[in-house]
Image (tube, rainbow, N blue to C red):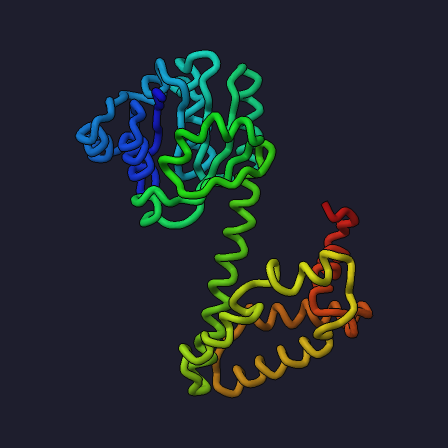
Length: 295
C-alpha cells in the first residue's frame, strides 16, 4: 500500500521501517530531519509537512506524543486531511486521551474519511522486531483490510470491535501495569528489608494472583459470575494486609499504595462485605462509583 507516516520517534521510526521491509511505499514526515533521513535511506520518500505526507496515499498513520499534536497533524491548516485522497484511511496509533481521540475521529469522519484508533502495546524493542501488540478500535472486516499494515508492525492484533475501544483498552491496560509496577516495588523492597531473597518470593508470586493478576485468576470464577461466596474472605484479606503494613512499618519501608489498598478493604468491610469473597472488592468499587451496569 501507499502509506503516509507522521511521527518517527522511538516507536514510530521502527514501525515505519518495518512497513518498508514489508513492501509498502512510504512517505514520511517528522520534525526531526535526522529521523526522516534514516527512513529515506531505507527507501521512504520525504515529506515537507503532514499535508505533503498524506498526498496520494491509501492510508495515513500518525504516531505522535499527544492529542493536540495528532489534531494539528491531521486537522490543522497544513494537516494531512487537506490533501488526503477520498476513501483513504486515517489510522492513529498514538497513545492519547480517549475523549480527545473520539473528538478527532468524529471530525475526521464528518469530513468523509474512515478512522481507526490502533494504539500499540509492548516496548520499542518489540517495535524494532515487528512484534508489537496492536489494539485495533475497529470491527473484524476493517482490521482484515488493514492487516497488511498491522502485520508488518505487530505479531498480534486484538480486534476490539468498535472505534474508540482500542485507545480505551490501551489506557486501562497502562493504568494497571503502571500502578502495579509501583505496588510491586513496595513488595520487592519489603522482601529486601525482611531478608527474604527476591528470587524466592518470585517463585511463589509467579504462581499466585500476585504475579498472574486477578483478571485471570480470582475474578472469573467468582465476582464475574455473580458469585461472592468466599474462597478467601475480605476480612481475612484485610487482616493479612494489616500484618504486611505493620511489618513494613517496623522495618521502616514506606508502603503508600499498600496503605491505600487497606482503606479500600476497610471500607468494603464496613459496608458489610467482610465475609464475602475478596473478589467482591470489584462490587464494592462499583457501588462507590455508583455504577449499576456491568457491561
